[in-house]
Length: 446
Image (tube, rainbow, N blue to C red; front, side, top):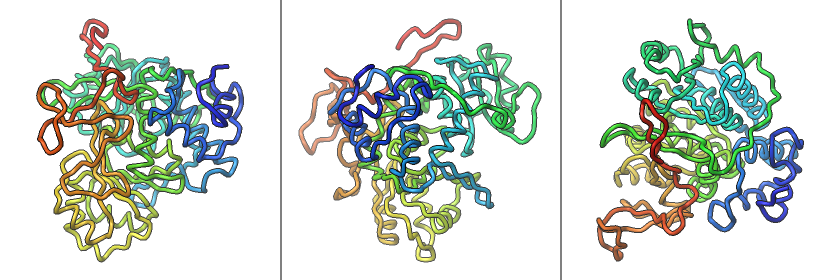
C-alpha cells in the first residue's frame, strides 16, 4: 500500500486509497486533522501525492466525516432560483447524485478517462453535479460561458476535440448548427424538461442511473479541466489544469483568503463558465463549507441584497462591478445578519467602492488576484490591514515578486510587472501547459 501522507491522516486516507468503493468507507478522522494535512501539501510542507482525485479523496472523506458527526449540519450545496424552488444536498447526497451522473457519462455517453466534455450551463445544480461526475470518471471538463456564439462553440469544440457537450434549450440550436463541423462530438446532453432530436435528456438518464460507481484512480498530474483564456490578444488558448493543481491548490487560500470553515455558506455570483466558479467549488468543498448558488437569470443589485437578507450566507464574492451596483442602493434598508466576510476580484477595485461598502456594512472587501493559469496568486487575506489599491501579499506556495521587463526583481517602491517564480521549482498549483491542437492533428506543443 502506497504511503503518501503522514500521521493519523495518512492512516485514514491510505486505507481507502485506490478505486472508490473497493475498500469501503474511510475511517473517521476529525476534520481539523485532515484539513491540516491538505493545507500542509498546499503550502509545500508535504509532498504532493502521486495519486489524487478530488471526488474520492476530498468529497467522499467529507461525506464520511458528516456521517460520523465531525461536520456541522450544513448542506454541502444549496441552490435557489428566486421563485421558491430550492435544491439542498449534504455531502452524502452530493456523492450519491454525482455517482449517478458518473454512470450517465460512462454509460449512455460512452466517455472514457481522458475524454473531454464541454459544460455550457447557467447556474443550475447540474453544473456542479457534472463537474464532480467528470472527476469520478476521469473525464476532462471544459467549462464555457452561456454567452458563447455559434462561432465560439465551433472553435472550442473543434480545437479541444471534445466528445460530448451538455447545455440547455437556449444553446442547443447553436450546437446543432455547427455539430456537423465538429467530427469529434459524439454525444449531446440536454438539461431540460423536454426532449430534442439528436440529444439525450440528462434529467431522465439521471433518474434511471445506478448509485453504484467505482471512481477512477487518477494521478495528481492527470488532467482535470481545460479553460479557454479570454482571447484578448488572439484566439483563446486552452489552459490545462491537473487533478492536484485545482484539487489541492485552493485549500490554503480557502482558509486564509476566503476564510472558510465547515460552518460557512459561501456565495460567489460568478458565471459557471469562468474560473472563479471552479475556484469556489474547490476552495469551499476542500474546507467542508457549503456552496450557495442563486440562479440569477439576470444579475441585479436588489436581488443580491434581498438574497443576503433572506438566506444565511456568511461569505460573499462578487466582481467589483457588482459591488459598485450594490453601494448605489440604500444599504440601511437591508439586514445581513449572517454575512461576515466579503471578497472581490476579476477586475480592478475602485477604492471609493471599497470605502462605501465598508462604511455602510462594516465589512471589508478582500481583493484577490489570479489568472486562468494559476490559483490565487496574491490577496488581502482575512485579518490583514488593507491598503487601498493594493492586492495584498503572495498566496502560498507562490513566490511573487515585482520584476522589470527582463525578469529581474525590482526593489521596494518601484513599478514593474507581477512575476511568479517557476524555477527551479515549479509550483504544483500552476497550470500544466497551454494545449495546442491542430484541427487535423494531435497536440503538438505542451
